[in-house]
Amino acid sequence: MKTVRYADIYLRNLQEDESKRLKNVEQGNIKLQKLFRSILKETRYVETQKQMLEAIKISKNNVLKKAEIDLMQIQNMIKQGLYEKFSFNEKILKALTGMIYVTGQNDKRYRLGKFNIEINFDDEAYPGINIQNDSNMTVDGHDHPHISDPDEPCFGNVKTQVYKLIGKMEYVMLLELIHKYLCSYNAGNAYIHLPEKDEDGNFDDYDGVLDIWPEVDKRGRLKRRR
Figure 1 (cartoon, rainbow, N blue to C red):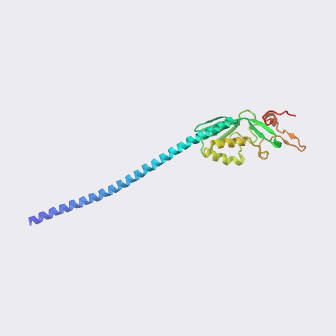
Figure 2: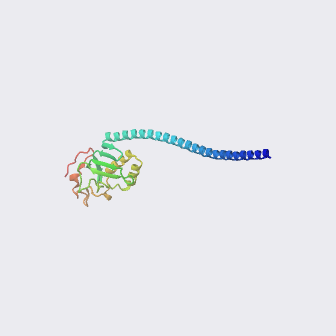
């Protein structure tokens, strides 16, 4: 009887130990599975970061190439006389145009002066744009026929395009567009009108415009006033 009892106790101890070991194995497997999933997750994360780093590297190379191309194009605009100066940092873009001329009625040409352009990027949603006559050639406080306030130039139908180019950081195209805008004149929506024909076919200078924005020839030379 003692032998049977001893064996029974020993067997129960073995069974308890077996049950404990099985539970440990089960818990260990669960931990290993979690650890494996964690390792797999971290591996994927690391691979994703590597891919993103590679994409950033490619983007940086592309940005450097684009910057080189943009600077070359800006230098070409300076050589052509469209602009005289250009500077840029994280907060503001500045440029000074060359002499601006516009053509009014009957292909008459007028000299408006040079213009300072400033684009402030502090407000990403609505960047501030300031265009001011740098030559003090203003008529009744207007820097340009289409500018009543330097801080709010009237871009008309190109306004959307202007802000899209700012958003895309296409500054060369932006400077080209602004230069074309400054060289344009539309009597229909101008704040200050260039001399227009009267009923007799003569050109009347209603606002004394020619005292500030004189008529010039194709070479930019002043024309004699009659």
